[in-house]
Image (cartoon, rainbow, N blue to C red; front, side, top):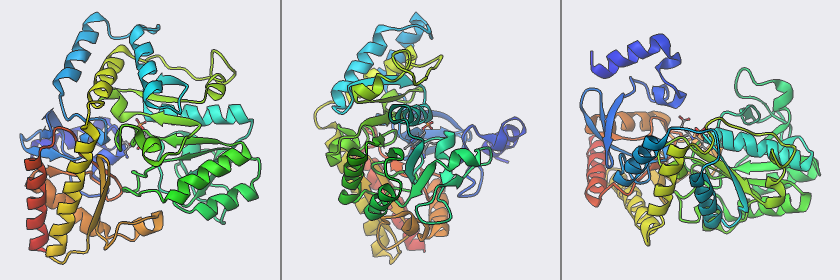
Length: 425
Ligand code: KE4
């Protein structure tokens, strides 16, 4: 038995599924998850001492790679002054100022400790601001595990949703309308049917939780138009796309101005940090200024703030995002070319520093098309790459991430490994 397998068996005795977040359990791809001991640059090592080139990067935060020296030093220095105060600190003000400067749609921002907290708070804020209860989300999009967001599409078209998780009250789920991603007409129809009843639309402006799905231009534009026309709040969930798809996040890339935005992952540089922010007239409804309650013991934690400030400053370097996007593009083009050489039904695409790979002839543009991809072929590919020392997301329904620490040689080695796997059939 390997050390990984030993640890997994032991973990399952005291931690549900042996993991502290379900996707880590490898249930979608099979086999035992790898327990990591340390990371360096774009590599991680498992409990058996095996190195992997890492394309998960803690699900997006590690845009600078593992153990970025400046980030680690900033956290160490902050820790030496105190781990937490439960009181305001200058660092939080500096980070808030930097966020509203980098995200022009945000006049104000509130720091929290996770993406879930950010989206849960933004939903409550939109409901409080509009006085409406109904929200719209899209099938395949994940916005964290807030009750109102663990909802799947209702039985009839444009009907309200049903819980997608046990423990979510049906009479809460009924306030969530689940529509098809990239279906602009369906969105328009929903607003016509539920006129003036919608508090907000929340969307991943580039979907990354059903694998990567790029938005159609008319989809985001319709969202902006309908929310404006009907007084609904448009929430861009940029927890994954924020500072990942470009220096202006997805809203900068696509030129759509949301009313609220949520962030996480990259802004914490690997430490627990989330944020929600947007229009001043909406944000001023948040306690202690307004009637919408929201709070957190470790919100704005000084170690997370220190890591976030260093990360956000480093990725603002001239050419950072262009280089990251070029490297990610080289990866997906190389993988697609290798698959084509060997007649494998495969496609891939990237947006900035995130990418999707699909065992299907062309990249999917909808949830239904994602579900038609060959999941078993992905799972076989995943394990073959894992054995070869390349760590992809352990699910066919997740995006992958490249970091500044991945070199051209790492990308070339990844493509060569995939080529050998495609050649072997
Ligand atoms: P967290 O609560 O996990 O920090 O963020 C929730 C969240 C919100 N919005 C988007 C667009 C997200 O992608 C996420 C979390 N993403 C997953 C990856 N698919 C985190 C990995 C996990 O759940 O363990």
